[in-house]
Length: 359
Image (cartoon, rainbow, N blue to C red; front, side):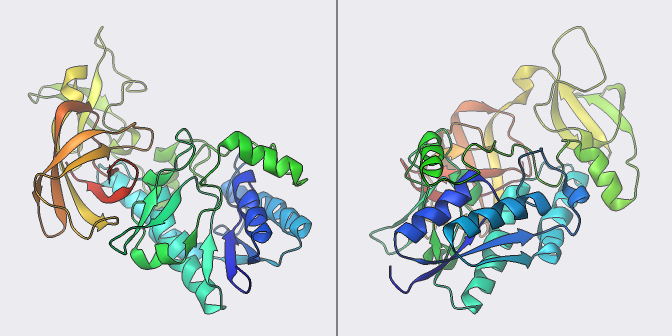
């Protein structure tokens, strides 16, 4: 790897720090960068030791880069992050969908923007601390593969990367378990070896999405009706961005039996409630399709489908294919298919591609 240059996205955490360390050991010319997406630390106050943005992350990443004796820079991606992540997040919630901002950030900020800037300064690759692997298949296509640690596997959040992006990407920690990564960091003397992982969405550290959306838009959300599946009004809700499909807790309404969010109807500002079995379905439709390990999907194709990040995956069959859409049928009904989330399709180990759930 002599004379090959790689830009490593450094969040100040142990995974990206070890990624930089491993690449330097392998002989790459390593440059560390941190993406500045907020101008002030208090705008993005994460956990005391965690977070992937803000000044605290910058300082941790800078210390690691100094230890590794690699160049280090902070690049401003605030505009790209606002447009492709924050605005998207707000618009999706207001439309009654539940977005996944990490997927949008990966595709449009960490890769599309960071990769282009890296190539422009003469780098050959970019790298991150994601738990995933990349394979060049017999067809010549690149695919993201499940990591060596199934517990930490992050391939779901990477399904939307393009072939050109994968061609210039390295995932150095993808072969390892988390415990091994911490051991490597400790042996290397990296001060972040035992830094806790960040858990929440970085720009909403308190998890109160509805309040964030109100602050971002300057508009207070209108209350509406809770309704039953057959249209009966059951009570008042606080605004649809407070809810997501499958939710049981925090509804502020009681019926003496478990009740769940079944559907959000932004056009009528209604939240539909039902019993647990009403949250199960055997079908979904997805659009905004990205093919990865294959160049197209076909009707009758058998896949393993993940409908959310922490979903283990379940067998499914592609029942129809459109120009930028597909339908999936599940032999066994699945719970809480949520519009706005990604559905990611796998074979045994590779990401075939995926799309955004619409219904």
